[in-house]
Image 1 (tube, rainbow, N blue to C red):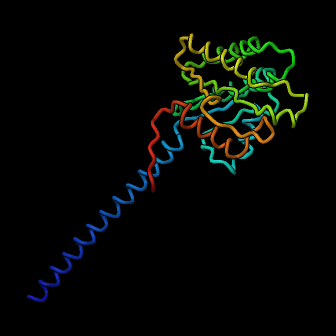
Image 2: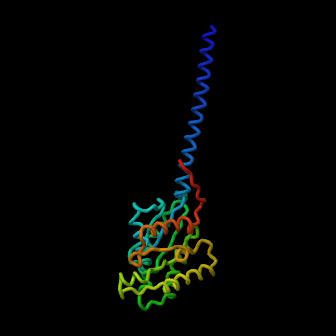
Image 3: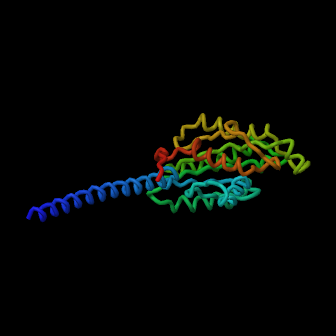
Length: 243
C-alpha cells in the first residue's frame, strides 16, 4: 500500500512537471508568434502601403529588388526617362488605379520623385516646370485626403561624371535641381495641407553616382532606408523584435 502511494506521488509530480513545461513552452511559442506578428507588421510596415512614383532612378531600384532590402509593401510606379508628360499619361492614371482600389485596412503613402529628366531640357524654365508638377500633385493631394503624400527632393547629379558620360547632351546642373527643389520647399511651407510633406534627401544624404546620374547599389539602399526611416510617417512606430 505504501509502495502504491509512492507511485501515485511520483505520477502526480510527473504530471505537475509536465504541465509546467507545457505552459512554459506554450508561452515561448506564443511570444514567438507575437514577436513574428510585430516584426512583420511593424518593422516591415504590413499595415502601410508605400507607392513611389518616379523615373529611372526609382525604376533601377525596383529592378534590383532581389539584391536590395526593399520592404515588401513598397509599390513602384516608375519609368526610365519619365518627365511630366509620362506622369500625365501613365504615372497618374496608374496611381489613381491603385488609390481607387485601396484597402481599408491599409494606410497609403505616395512619394513623388520626378523632375531630373525635365531639367535636362535646354530652354526649360525651371520654376514654371516645378509649378506644373505641383499642380498635378496638388490635385491628387486634395482629392485623396486620406492618403499621405510626400515630395522627395530631386537628388543631385555628379557634374564632372555626367558630362563625361553624356557629353554635351546633358543640360542638367545641380543649380537647376536646387531651383526646382526650392519651389516645392516654399510651396509646402506656405501651404496648409496636412497630408503632404517634403523629404529633403538632397541635403540629408551623400550620393555616389558612377555615371553622374544614377546611383550605385549602396546609394540605392540608402534611399530606400531614408524613405523608410526618415521620410514616411508610418501609422504605427517601428518596433524591432527578434524571433
